[in-house]
Amino acid sequence: MQNNSRLFQMNARFHSLRGVDACQLPLLFNCPFSYVPHPLCVQASESVMRYLEQQENWAEELRRGKMFGVLLVQAPDGEVGFLAAFSGLLQGTNDLPFFVPPVYDLLNPHLHFKQEEDEISALNRHISELEGAKELADLRERLILIKHEAETALADFKKRMSEDKTRREKLRKSLSDDGKSSDSLNAESAFAKAEYKRMKLIYSQKVAEVSALVAAREDEIARLKCQRRERSADLQRFLFENYILKNAFGEQRSVYDIFASEQKMPPAGTGECAAPKLLQFAYNENLKPLAMAEFWYGDSPKNEIRRHGEFYPSCHAKCEPILNFMLQGLPVEPNPLRSNADLRPEVIYDDPWLLVLNKPSGMLSAKGKGEYAVSVEQWARERYPEAKVAHRLDMSTSGILVVAKDEITYKHLQRQFAERTVKKRYVALLDRRPQLQQGTVALPLCPDINDRPRQMVHHEFGKEAVTLFEVKGDEDGRCRVSFVPHTGRTHQLRVHAAHPDGLDAPIAGDELYGRKAERLFLHAEYISFVHPHTLKQVEFLVPAPF
Image 1 (cartoon, rainbow, N blue to C red):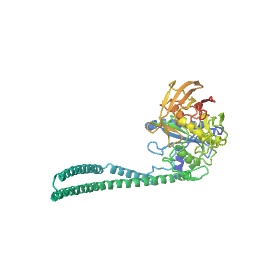
Image 2 (image 1 turned 90 degrees about the vertical axis):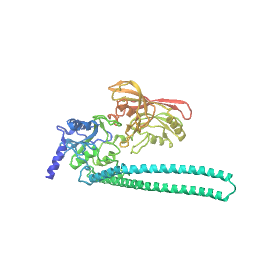
Image 3 (image 1 turned 45 degrees about the vertical axis):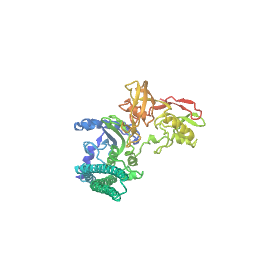
Image 4 (image 1 turned 120 degrees about the vertical axis):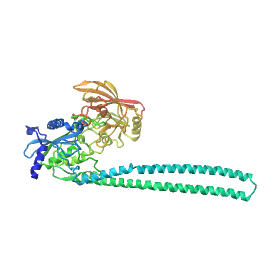
């Protein structure tokens, strides 16, 4: 009976693609971090979108937007089909018909995670009740009033003491040398000082009494918060230790162990994206993964750039470590983001102090955290040991890059960039024509910490980013545009082009904010700056290769 139930579940989640010939199947599994979706994955995604359009009860939630994924698979009998998954929750659950189940069912009320999560939630409510309790608020207000009363009373008494002291000093001068009068004045002074100390002690005791009551309640809240923090950390670790993932070799590792090997903790929500769910189900059901794709359905989030029906690479923060493990044993296309060993910059100017280079698309300006073969800075340091790139271009952007051969030149150039006296111009091809012929885009940018290197528009936490643009003409369904950036934020031109509040027209080939093509059609064509040693204005122009 259990085997029949499992077979039914598998059949309900395996969606056959009829009439697929072997010649249509991909030879290699696509790299999930940079890909053009396979035609069969596009077909599968369209089937998922048609299914979603039929779910009227889900319409409002889907309108707000969600990431979905499809996995092209082949059954042991040779039948080709696809699996579908959604990231996170849908309709308040992680397991719905048509879609594969989660790797670990954290919503199961009978499992430890859900029970402990419910207890932590109850602890949260208790902490909120204690923090908002009227008794604590009354005690805090009473403490403020007592402190104010004490401060006022003691200040008034001290003022009277000062006035009495002045009066006594005048009396001492006007009276004859009478020992009894002097003793009386001294006694009055001593009494006033003793009375001040008594008042101060009484108020100190009152403040201490109420402070102790407040502290007792605040200590209890702090203790509960510490308990909540420890229990939450323990539960998070428990969850990641129970997310047991598989790869094509049949090996198994927990999410916790995978991230521990990179000496970091998994971000919250790791394992809940569509890609790991799809691969895990395929391995569990003996289905051969052939290709995958992830697409956005619904409106774009407020700060991110996501377009309905467009395909996107897997996220780096949550998915890269676990997919690198789960794809082991599959024939996977090489990651084009890491395959730049043969790329070299073209030297367009060389003097004793600096180089001006034409960087090819696909080459890093300077070495990052990834295992990239060669960066422009590495290439330059093989020739000039102190070389540093004076500014940076995105890896996918081609064009002019200035390299300083020594520290003095580098600092001089850095100062010019910091003071925004360097003039730069870029040329790009957009996927469509913007509504305006020319204008300015001012949208503040900050990193998407859960999916670097993506950037977000954020009016609260973003840094100023300003771009001037001018449409130059239409070419083969695309639009040529000139960009002049007034600031130099990461991905500034790409986000300003793609964002609905910007040009609302992604740069062609932009797989992060638009649609992947043979390259990112963005080129740094012009730069002008003061030469650090000759102090003359110099300018360089390298026309775009497209």
